[in-house]
Length: 352
Image 1 (tube, one colour):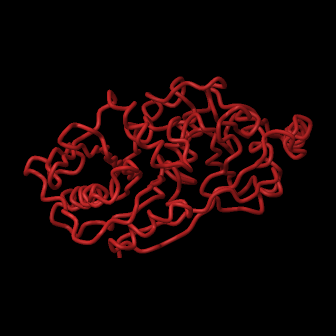
Image 2 (cartoon, helix red, strand yellow):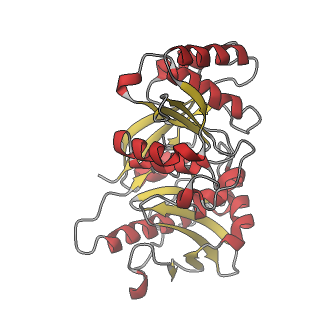
C-alpha cells in the first residue's frame, strides 16, 4: 500500500542551492534552521502553522485531498523512520514551500504556485539530501526516494498528471524506478457491494467455520503479531493506526477517532485466532482509503478476502475518497470482488 505527492514547476539552471546546515543540525531528525539563498529560510514547521501549510498544499496539489490529511502527513508518525516537516519562508515570513520527509523518503514537497521558479523547490530537495547524508554517519548514504514511503504516504508516487514535478525530478538527476496504481470501487449503487451480498459472504465463511466481524480489543495483540510476522511490520503499523486511538496503542495515539471506531475487519477461527484481515483509514485517515489486507495461505480460496473487502467498503460510503484502493497488487481480485476500475497512476523516483 503505501507515499506522497509533489507539485512543482521546472526550475531554471543556476539557481542558488542550499548551503551546509549548521553543525548542530547535522543529525538526522534534528530541526533545520538555515538560510537557503537570498531571502529564503528553511525551518521546522509546527502544528500551529497547520492552517497556512494546508492552504499552500491545497493550492499546489490539486489532485490530492490534502485538507483532510495534512496534519497526518506533516506531523504524524512514520513507523520506525525519523521524520521531519520543513517550511521555506521569505524574509517577510511568508510560507512559500513545504517538505515532509522520513528516512530516505521525500513524502511531500510543494511550492506555492505563485512562488515557483525561484529556487525554493531546489532548496527543499537539497535539504532532504543533506539530512540523509548527515544521518549516514560515515557510511554510504541511502538513495533519496520520492514517493512510496511505507506507512504514512499521501499517494504512492508522483501522480502522472503533475507533469512539472516529473520534469523537476528528472532535471535534478532522479530516475524512474517504478510505477503503481490506485483503483476505485463505487460505494453506492454497486451491485457487487450490496448488504445482501455481504451477508451471503459472511454466511459462506461461517459455513467453513469462520467468523467475520469488526476487530475488538481481545484480538488486537494476536492480530498485530500475526501481521508483523506473516506479512509486514509496516502493515502492522498501518493496521494499528486503523484500529484507532482506543485500540491501536502508540501508533494510533494521535489519530482522530472515526464513527466506526476500529476500521479493521477480521476472519476468526473458533478459537478466536485471526487468519485474515482488512483495514481502511490506516493511512490518509478520514479519506476512506482501503488497505492493507491479507489472508494466511492455509485459509485462502474460501471467500474471506471478499467478505472483508465488502465490510470495509460499507464503512466508507460517506468518506471523501471512499472506495479508493491504494498501491494495488492483485487488480483482478478487486475487479471481481467489487468492480474496481483504474483511478490514479503514479511514478516513483529514486537517485541512481
